[in-house]
Length: 85
Image (tube, rainbow, N blue to C red; front, side):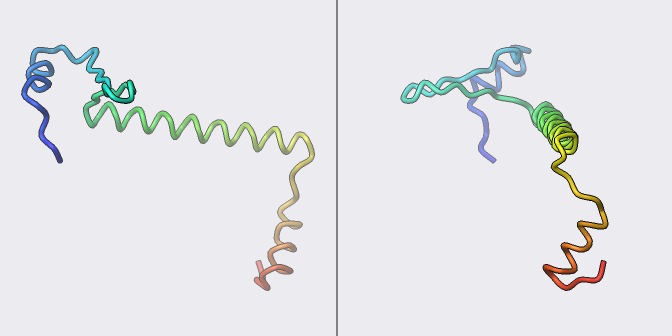
């Protein structure tokens, strides 16, 4: 890990964490500084949303007739891979 510069550490300790944004002067890209717990919660929420979106897409595909039964899937696996499922 790389230690934070002192001015950033001081801003965090002073409670000025609401807007710790940084701009790359060459690219103008904006970066945010998040503590580990906030980052973890954000990533968990993002994964949950991705999972929900995937489930909704699966339901929509099923409604459009783009699904097969478990028996059909087992037959495909047996034919393609020789597994007896």
